[in-house]
Image 1 (cartoon, helix red, strand yellow):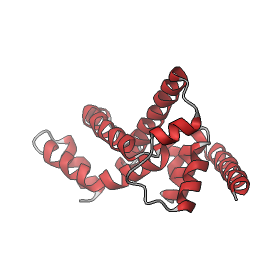
Image 2 (image 1 turned 60 degrees about the vertical axis):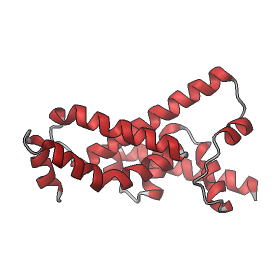
Image 3 (image 1 turned 30 degrees about the horizontal axis):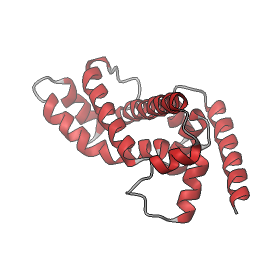
Length: 178
């Protein structure tokens, strides 16, 4: 179903539930991977995705249509992913776990073990939240700066700088590891 038809069905209380189920079906996988590339762990991505759709359901009447539906969904998903990272960071600071303990504690049974992907994942985990989000949306989701700007609510110039800094940090990280 195209976005306009879906949006019309979402706004109609008679078709809202069915349209919402269609939206979940259409966008779940894409949003899951957007979140997963930011948070890293399958379980965290699942939790953030569920929270994303809960927020979407609760805020459907507030969606004004200033942005595309897909952009709005991505914005909520990225914010959920970043919120999860902030909560995890606070929890880790409170429990005083070190990085190797965290890596072991949060090992991912769904990870395929590819060494290069793990090195990239480790490098991405060292990035600050904003750089991690921009890098993930650009590198994994192949989004244009304009759309990332709408999702994150920031300027394209700032995004380009964040992406550049993220790439440089990842290069430095990978150079040290090889």
